[in-house]
Length: 106
Image 1 (cartoon, rainbow, N blue to C red):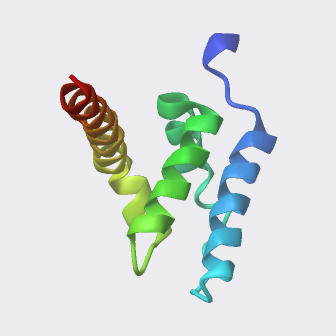
Image 2: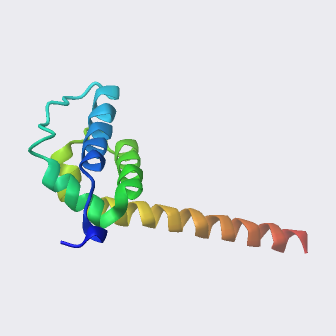
């Protein structure tokens, strides 16, 4: 495997630790086995980068009432699409709002 695609072990632990921390903040069960879940964390980091995974976790915890690692790791692509759609919607709304202001000023 090339060095470019290697994920540092501390990155995997950091990702899993962040998820567990968020679960504890919501008073949810945080008994996931971080050693058993390293492969999933590795795949997520390769797909979205560590920073991107943190952003997905933040978005997921903001929109989900009962977040779980299993759902997150199996549906990260859906979370990413929903996050991007929300960001695009926000951008379009801001543009339309500005256009309406400009139109009203004229």
